Image 1 (cartoon, rainbow, N blue to C red):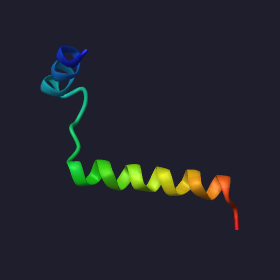
Image 2 (image 1 turned 30 degrees about the vertical axis):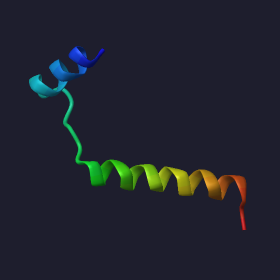
Image 3 (image 1 turned 60 degrees about the vertical axis):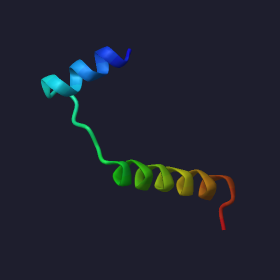
Image 4 (image 1 turned 180 degrees about the vertical axis):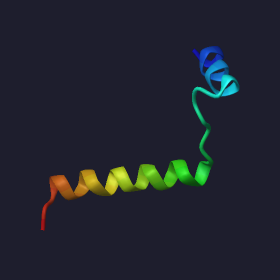
Length: 40
């Protein structure tokens, strides 16, 4: 699987994202899930 993903990135089909961007998106999704579970 990793070889396939590497090939996707190398060929330009998929663009890599930086670590900070990944964690920002992860935090945002977590916040949205928490809001759905506990609406105020």
